[in-house]
Image (cartoon, rainbow, N blue to C red; front, side, top):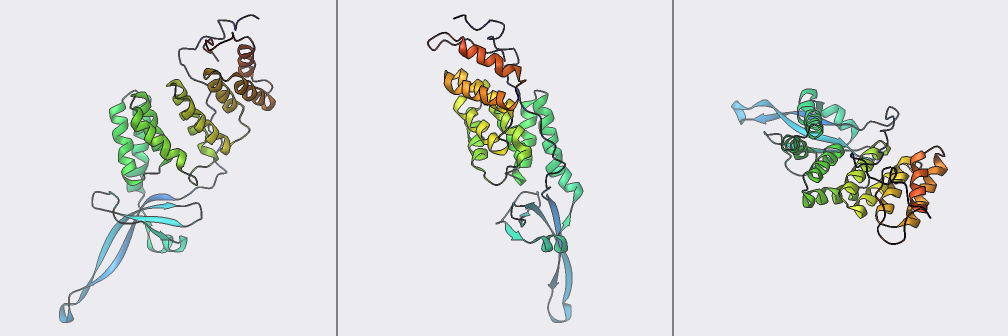
Length: 270
């Protein structure tokens, strides 16, 4: 039986698989997250000197999956303090006021800058921006993914592993539009040889979208690199059942069928 052709079985220089494009999120429900202010009138003084004053506090508020809101007070440095409270939608719109400038500076801007610095190979600056955001919103999905990918690129595996475990453990936060983040994370884990961890993320992505042919191809690649050819073949065949024109899956099947006996499998260029 001929060996897998060298042109097909050599890892490309990029060393990555085929992450799917983020799906169109225009029809996805938008959950409210932001920095809000709340003004309260406080009575001060006694008897003849009694009066009132207005107190303004700032809150990080995030909508949950059941339609209620978690509100946590922020201190003078805009760090979270105290225990979060649950408020209703009515209370949110009647008692709290969105602060767009603060929401941008404290939530949106650090995320955008963190992504930019990570993409331009400036890990120290990227870490600083992601951590700024996590001081307020520890469960911000993109920031946590970004920080995890950054730690992986820096070979800080212990820190990366902690973030991976936290992300996998979150149940209600993830929605279909986050599928591509799990897929991208799985690709980065596979590139580091963390195959079991990569599969956890790929299968978590499958829970969000079970008909993604490229995701199944990535799963097949991991199984191939683990030497689990039967599982790799099954995943590649399933990818082809969804998209018969997926040429990469056909090439992978050729590599599987032509693989030499033993554990010394040729690397992939798929």
